Amino acid sequence: MCGFVGVRRFDGRPPDIALLQRMSDVIAPRGPDAHGMFQQGPFAVAHRRLTVIDLSEHAQQPMVDRELGLTLVFNGCIYNYRELRQDLEGRGYRFTSSGDTEVVLKAFHAWGQDAWPRMHGMFAVVVHERDTGRVTLARDRFGIKPLYLAQTRGGLRFGSSLPALICDPEVDRSIDLMALDHYLSWHAVVPPPLTLLKGVRKLPPGSSLSIDGEGEGTLHTWWQLSVQADPELAALPVREREDMVEQALRTAVQRRALADVPVGVLLSGGVDSSLIVALLAEMGQPGLQTFSIGFDGAGGEAGDEFMYSDLVAQRFGTTHHRIHIPTDQLMDALPGTIAAMSEPMVSYDNVAFYLLSREVAKHTKVVQSGQGADEVFAGYHWYPHLATVPADSAAAAYEQVFFDHTPEQLTQLLLPAAQAPGMSRAYVDQHFRGIGGSSVEKALHLDTTVMLVDDPVKRVDNMTMAWGLEARVPFLDHELVELAGRLPVADKLGDDGKGVLKAIARRHLPREVVDRPKGYFPVPILKHIEGPVLDLVRDTLASQAARQRGLFQPEAIARLLAHPSDHLTPLRGSRLWQVALLEMWLQTHQL
Image (cartoon, rainbow, N blue to C red; front, side):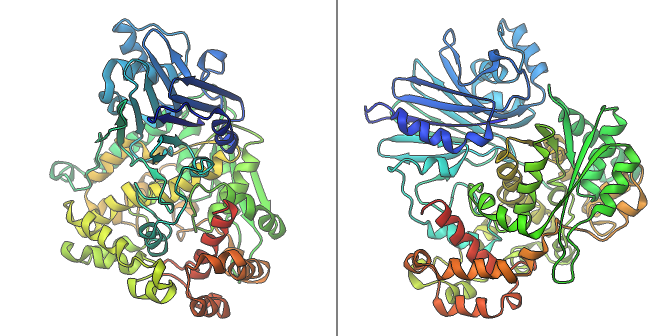
């Protein structure tokens, strides 16, 4: 788990190494254990390393294989690297390290674009070929690891973080209005390749980009998900399908226990993370550490779910860390949380993950986390609603229950020059038309391949890596997700959502943990905009920078500030916080 930045120039000029160092400094928290740089003609790259597998100097990056003529930087973890290495050794490849980085390099040499489907794991990879000058970039199936791109007249910049790329003055830093529409419509989800900045794009998950020595690029999609019930699977007994899912989840958890350092669990007390703890404990992982976080209550709402996480920790005898963050610390952490965002993200639990990661990183470098289960196994409240909607009306129904603003509302919120209304609506319509299945299956496909990537997954990566902590997500094991996609919809919708997971959980967990109302990571003072948070929001939106930016109608902002609690999205989020967070992020990164 690491971070990297780099440049490949096509204009005959050499890379600016001082600029590359400044870009590398931005991503330093992602890899606090080592730093390396490499230049070869028009190509230069820098890497920050977090040592998790093969802690020796032999696994340092950038990794250069002069015999094969390849230079590689890699962020992530390949869980089946030992099996791939055995295959490669059978083909005559020899290794000088014991980790997964060298396996990725030699797998690319052996199989080219066919290497990526062979890999089980999370990864962002860049490979430079010395003899042809070609650069290949690849990203894992669910975009668990980020990969940002900036193409200018001078060449290509790439990296693990958007803020790192905008160190380069050649990158266009103006706001992309299509992305702005997505951000305000779709709960801050900006689907690839867009980002909020015109000059920066992100590589789509499950794809690779090859750019030849002349700067011509070819995008290749190497993996696609299908979410549509398989009649043969539906014909099996329910218990048999449950057993198949349990075995796939057990395998996914076991794969992600691979490390040369201890692996803990972020334990919220919900079914998903609790099930991970149960399976790891049953596998006999020694010294299992679990971590839970809570805050002061606000607005009559509790700020923690410790009663449930305590039950799980006691059942499985974990070394449990119960972390309570008072409100003043939460406020103090907001600037750091926003600075850690590669793109603005409005969910309240960003600061929770940021502070939790700060504490967890004091004890371990690797944790497993329950993200993805709700999107894969239909845990959200909008899926039952969609089950009653015909497939040809699914897009409109999805927008009604999920979108933060309608196009009409955006015309009232944004100044005319900042409007590109309807982009998100058109995107969802096109996505739903391009896939089969019921309304629920269409929504699950969209949420798993797009929303999940650019909200929960991005949130976990950004907040954990801000403290040099590697988070692994077993519910996004691609074999488990593909199996879930083939299940009957009823297996997922049953039991008020995630029916098949809850059936499995009842075999392992206390009933109180399974048979409880669905919880979310509670951060009450950000949900109820009042007191010091309201002061911060008001000051941000009244600032000279915000006024000069000219995005929002002053009258609309005044209405939001006058009654913050009255302007909530269908997901019960604050429209005021969404607007303010965008401006905070832009100011934090001096945009």
